[in-house]
Image (tube, rainbow, N blue to C red; front, side, top):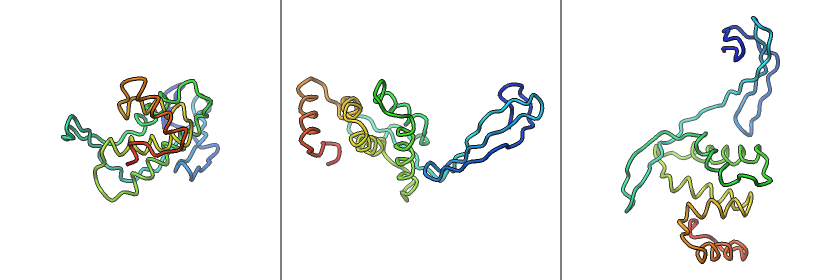
Length: 162
């Protein structure tokens, strides 16, 4: 492990904490050369499926490896300036990642991942849910957005869950 301050490769572990909910181990390290302290995170990584990106008509255009950071960023955009702690976003991303790991298939559609996100956001924050739904469900005008808000307020199932 290289020190982020001086670039030396020698460090020692000062403290270790496991977070089983996130499948992570956080380590506090001290550089043997400059003495600065820094943290590292180790994440258990199972076999994640390839994400299939589809185009018009549902035709598979490309396949790419699942990217946890990309998923978290898309959720963070929907939650921007909302009173949602970063730990809640990490839990949602971790739950989606765990569901993907538990699948036996080697591929999953980006649409299926989007449905997992929208279901999680519906529980987490209704405004973030609407922000994500506008893009994910393709709500193109205010009437469609109002209909989705009405469905959310009355507790009806959204189109994505059908």
